[in-house]
Amino acid sequence: MNPFSVLSLSSILAAVPLLFPSTGRAEKISVDSVISGFRLKPEWSVGTEMQGDYVIPTDPFFKGSNVEEKRISGSFGATLRGAFRFNPSSREGMLYPGIYQGAAIGIKTFFHKRLMGTPGSFYVFQGAPFHNFSSRLSLGYEWKFGIAFGWHHTDANPPETSSTISTAVTAHMGVALKLNYTLSSNWLLSLGIEGTHHSNGNTSWRNAGLNSAGLSIGAAYILNPLGSPISPPEKLKEEADSKRWLFDIMAFGAWRQRVILLPSSIYTENWERYDVLAPGKYPVFGMQFAPALTLNRWVAVGPAFDIQWDKSADLSNYWIEKPYEEGLSFYHVPFGKQISVGLSAHAELTTPIFSVNAGIGYNVVNPKGDRAFYQSLTVKTFITQHIFLNVGYRLGEFKDPHNIMLGIGYRFN
View 1: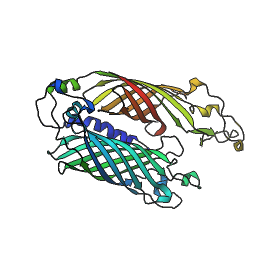
View 2: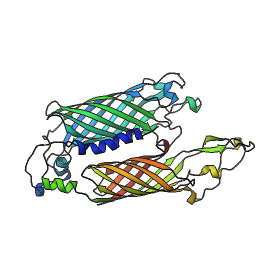
View 3: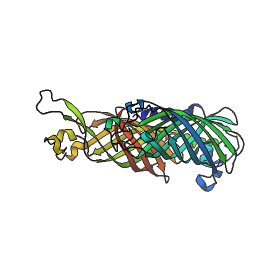
View 4: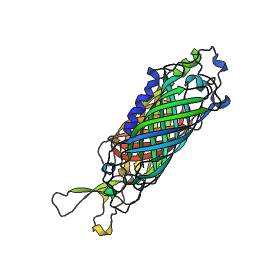
């Protein structure tokens, strides 16, 4: 599993608005008259979307190494969506023209119910146009972040022939490029190219995950059309694009399982090692302090100081040697042996309500005494101007799953 196929595209999309600025209707408006937030009613829409995907065969299970010996190569899904756009006369509507956000619920089939189930999903999404070909046709981005539920995840067969989805609920992450066409003042059509990733965030084993890519087609009905975007006053635009520092402090927690390396026999000279699943689930807690410099209203970049405690860290060095049939157990691992401290660099797509953050870091202190690269992809949801909820994922070396990041933070600005 590798959510950084999604991460890489998200990082590119974060810079797209700089390259293709949206155009809007030019109207003379004074800064003092601009109203923020929901004091001006937003534009609401409801719609549906259908998506056909190719399942990328990243695991032998999808190639036919399963109880039915059948290849899993495609999926088809449908969703119901509700969304809103900020009023074009509001501060957010003028500074982020055409931006929309909402929630969706859907269902998907992989055409092999016994192997995969028929999972449903619930996710939030956000998108915006970054290039207008005409007054009706535009190209934009969209990301999705939520949960998928109802997977077939139990099997009486050995793990190597069981589903790669080992939990009933997984994360649902997606990113898309979309062509949007305004058919009338009330109807909007869309055609998209999408990539989707499902993962249990290493909360259970196995955690191979599922990656897919495909096409989507959608239609939305606008309940209360409010007109096209309005160009913001130059002074408001200058203020929004001015460079300034943001300071985020966040605490997060999670749980995880871990596969560790143990010697296959203490009686052999080579002490060959093999992977074994440590029993139980282990808590993870962490904190992050992240200053960021805004390059403009869309993008912020900066470093971060990361500290994380993982109760499953360094277990292999504290293994209690005993007969195999008695099961695995470990001595108490000192607290200091399970702390990692790292420095990371981040880029963030900053928009009203949501911010998408991608980071890459290096541990200067590591539980195992070595150094390791780590990566993260998170979504911050601002419930007030300063307080945000954080949902994200962390992995190492661009391939090794670490843990999810469920947290709360505060932004000083």
